[in-house]
Image 1 (cartoon, rainbow, N blue to C red):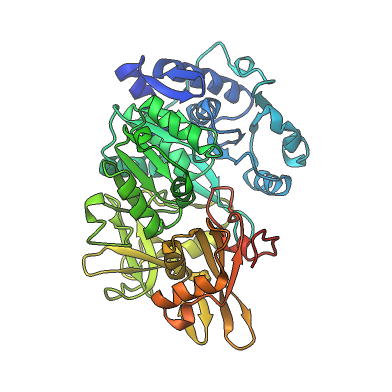
Image 2: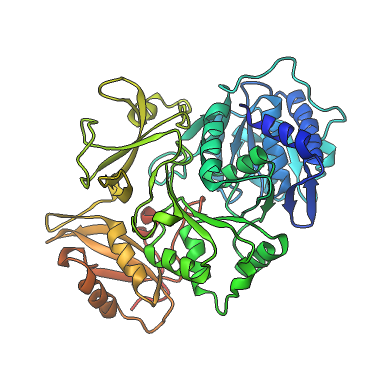
Length: 506
């Protein structure tokens, strides 16, 4: 099913129901449908029809939701770009996706004008000084034919932690498959009120919009998590039931002084994806909000979501990210693509209708990621992540394949060290990676965010030595006020390894 049909169906069921809350703006399903269909006409008139791409450079907000839905209604594919993107990266994305139209925040017009690939394209400007209504046609879009769900729906560019960013291709069918599977285990209904503070320009955030439209739920859109207390008050005031977060947000909650649990009384569930949630963070959330169901998940842009752990299984399967989401399979394999024995480290491969079509105009990268299963020849997504699976099939993340540290001839998984560091009461967040060493080959280095300014390197090493084998104990520790992050909000080992000006070095 095409995603814009979600909106149409939800409007038909209850058009007066609130679809979007964004600041002071509240849009019913009828109003959201009207805005999307009229903007779709404008996009089509500017050349953004079936088979074309629309580059969307907007802050999180109701206009972004309208732009996304309008693009799909016109038959085109979205290419959402985080508004914090710098000129060089934006130009690279523009050259790659070759958009027909650009929808841009008024304050970001200079960024577009500095990019020769975008400056000459038709441009729809929105924002305080831009008139969104002026971009709306008086006539709702009426396609001459039904568009198939196999059409390209989204080009979502990876954060580009290594090399040039790649455009992940998702069709309406792959997004539909993921959304239906996720809403099944989260038990989403029209009664849900979902909060999104995550960028709508990335898969985890975008999926909240898709999910809300599918279920006829209300989506509360916050611009960011820059002011956590304001977000928490929105949760209370809007009676939010679903709160997707990333580990950094959980860490900020843990550090908040005198945080009032009553602000979260309406919550039914919290989800965590994008990066592994440290057990210390998970335990704190469960203690602080005992009435809330916590779903630990794993996913990639290339498949939206891959695994989920039922809240009831957290204690029995401690540290696991669960099993394959409904209707899909997740298998740990060796270098030959054969399934490994239980508790053996191997690469996670994903199969199912939610897997991407490939990388836009990048056949080499596509062939590396989508490879045939040895016996059936069916294509599977090779995630590049190392996992183990226990005898019951529950999966546990080990490391990115290229993040493994080799110290003194021993392999060290950074996440295993990070888990221990985050259990130390005075450490809020940590990243671990290898650095060249004349004797060890690679030394384990930790970059930490400490909540106690008096914490010393030696205290951290002693704590780690009580819980880790000697070769896993960080030899180098650097204190910072915050961890570097990608545009999608993930703490980045690659960025952390770059020279920095640590304010708290000891």
